[in-house]
Amino acid sequence: MEQAVNISQGATKWDIRQKVWDYIEAKNLANFPRPVHHRIPNFKAAAQACDRLPVLQEFKSSRVVKVNPDRPQEQARFHTLTARKTLLVPTPRLRTGLFNKIVPPQNATKEDLRVCSTSQGVKKFSVPIGLDARVQVDLVVVGSVAVSEKGYRIGKGEGYADMEYAMMASMGAVNESTVVVTIVHDCQVVDIPEGLTESHDLTVDYIITPTRIIKTECQLPKPQGIIWSKLDAEMLEKIPILKKLQDLEQKAGKDVTLKVSSAESDKPMAEPKPEAKPNPKRDPKSRPRREPKQEPKHKHIENTAERPEGGTVEQEHPHGSSSTLYLGGIPAGLRVSELKSVLRERNAVPLRLTWQGAQHRAFLEYSDGPGADLALTTLQDLSINGHTLKAERAKSQRGGHKPNQTLQRPQNKEAKGAAHPPTATATVVSITAPCKEGS
Image: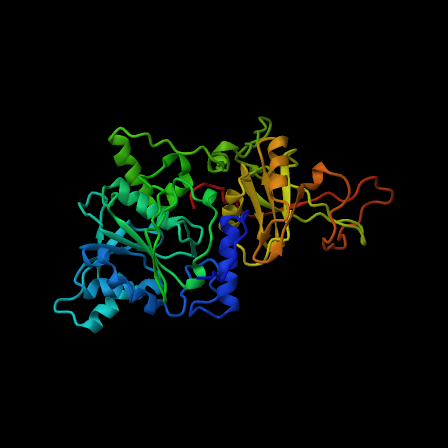
């Protein structure tokens, strides 16, 4: 079958997601919610595709089925309940646990089961399943943004499906015999370059579309458990159940050492705010203590430098590091987590990311000059959401002025004959969100 979306050999995961999302939107192939960008697409004919699930022998013989909570797989949840199988559904973003078991009301009708299959029904008719639960999952249904006939899968970029499977592997809920199925639109079946699939990525055994069932014969192993060295402390804070699993595995004698990431260097304790030195000549009770105006580096800084009318403002990183890159042209609405995902895929993860989304820019700090040079080469011709971003050295490291920056007229005029332009001031915008692996 000819593929609707053509993927170039050098495409990244982000490139592939973008092409599929753009195609679905352009061809009007999705239902609410729209647009489909940054989502598992709720494609039209999703119910028709899910109706093929009961045909699989692996589904017929299964007793426990785990289905993702997204809207396009709602009919798959319904078929699981009508077949009187145990249905497990992951908790959204794993905030409150791993997954819930759906418990329909006694003597439930088909209409009751249909309600239980919805997102609201999942919340109302479910009980949590803990990490110590002895459960064996026979079949897993996941959503995808793109998938190849070889079984390589790409999600929306946050890594939750991979994480869920790895956690189930850690608790012994899945093994080599567990079958993984994804249900997608035909246009989501594309050629995915082999090198894009990593050790933590979940592969699939079957692809179900509205028109066909594809057995992938994928030979790549599925995740055997959590790869702790790819996670950082920030991820454990976002997903509390990961911390519980880490404690359990540590007691079992496993290496649960986390990745050393920018999350550590971004904490205030890593770079403390300097203390104001008391003056022994003053009475501390009679005079208020002044805090220093210097802000720690872990804050986002917005440059508000002013220059004479008709000039330009330099795109200068607040800290003037010799290994800092300026990334301009960031499209409106892009989230910092999405930018971090792109940087990971291009192997250009910085030590610190200073986010100024409102100004459509960001600053990327690397460990040294050669590292910044390599990232600069990697980020050339970077395109996100149809917008080409501009990557270059931060202004403090190169000559000339940064063009296309709106200027403001100085409010406080310098004294006549001043030798220097007005100095820049800084406004704290927000705390930097650190880059991390595995999303």
